[in-house]
Length: 318
Image (tube, rainbow, N blue to C red; front, top):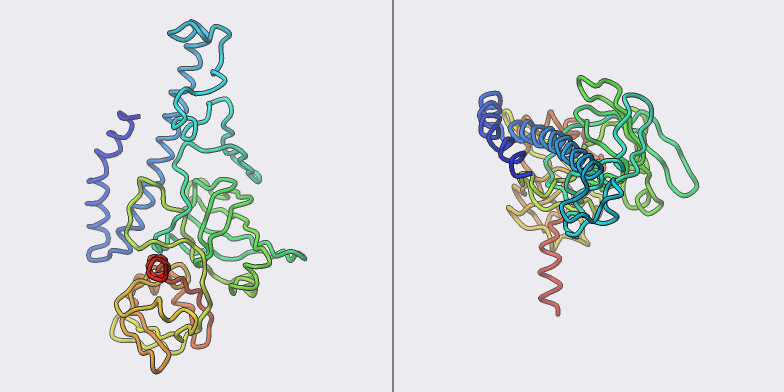
């Protein structure tokens, strides 16, 4: 695995230079290219790891392991190193993605498992189907650039951490496909996803891998509350969005601090506690590449405050 990692690291600087040339002075655009490159590298890393496991299995079947303990062939019943047991699954137990049809991958992946986000939206998706249930609702979302989805994967949908239940790739060349997520009753009640319909756009971000770049701030995908847009002001090439200050969470919101709105990592530009509002500055790329461009005064927005502030409050209270 060291050789594999070195090969990818050798191309990282070249990818960064190309991204910088394509998106000069645009951190959002640069990160989007680098994040996509990260996911491609992990896919290649997974394939190489599977190949190594297959070679080891073949060697064991032909000559047994070096200690002569695996003469019956195949993979051993367990891996000696518990760390490796969590990171790798024997090659013959890994189910690969089918070229067509709905995919339900029941097995673990070689890639790192994580359920944390950074608030850097990768793409937007369109809701193409809604299925209502007595215990919640199921959304089918179409999006591009998500070529490594698998069953059970955590994914942020407009700031709400959900689980991929099914997926399919429609166009292999562009990785355009759809995935389905289920909203439990609590999610329907505490977020505005219970009111979205076919045709609505949502922000999409896959969970950050342990070896990924951290360009936003710590985002859990646990929505604290819902606020509303109070004012949208265009300032030259930029925009200023003002929102109602949530009364139950205003103590966690500070001037120039981080806040996650609809899954987007943003910095407070101003805070007026007397007026009960706060504002953020939005650059053109964020406006165009996220659902903020669709927002109007009065529209709902998911709010997740900085979790570090919650931990600090608890420690101080104790």
